[in-house]
Image (cartoon, rainbow, N blue to C red):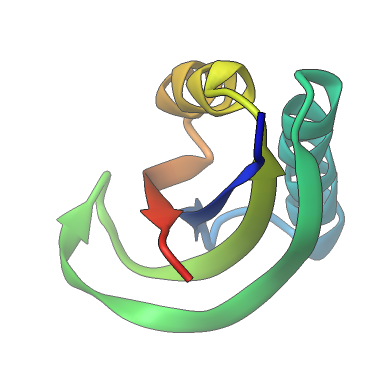
Length: 98
């Protein structure tokens, strides 16, 4: 089965210090890898002002992960855990066609 390309974008709370943010990113990259996905690229996009307040915050750190996956198991697990984790304000998973 051919691997599909996905882009995972999530917004990290600015209340985290740099060490905690790095640990969070490594944890969620690990979740993807442990569930069978290949993380091609994982990088911070930028700290940006949010269009609307989320959890009393006006800014967030956008992080983008490009992933190759055979199935949606890794993405479903990422989605489930991202909804639970309070440090991730919002997330979005998009299947890329390129």
